[in-house]
Image 1 (cartoon, rainbow, N blue to C red):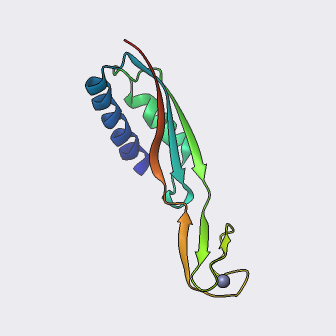
Image 2 (image 1 turned 30 degrees about the horizontal axis):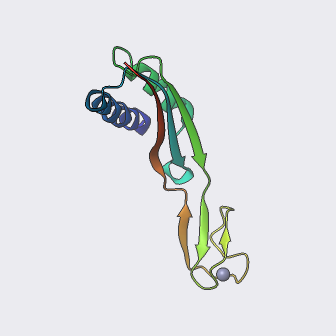
Length: 113
Ligand SMILES: [Zn+2]
């Protein structure tokens, strides 16, 4: 269950940020998670809600944007989003990940103290 350690890392980072920036309260946390991270949003949200109790993030909503997987062909440069390993244009197996590895806090909505 890596959602728990992921939520723990997010909450720890934001609690630290609250102290540094003097935020009153955090209302919304916008997170971007790529498909390749294999995160279950409901489990992540549950872990987050459990961990924020008794912190300045208590009551904050966790918004999770799931970023779909996409590939770029190493031969012809075309980009495709389906989860197929072969370039639909030229049939090449050479590919690189364009999106799907994201794991970042996009933005945070806070209240002044
Ligand atoms: Zn191609």
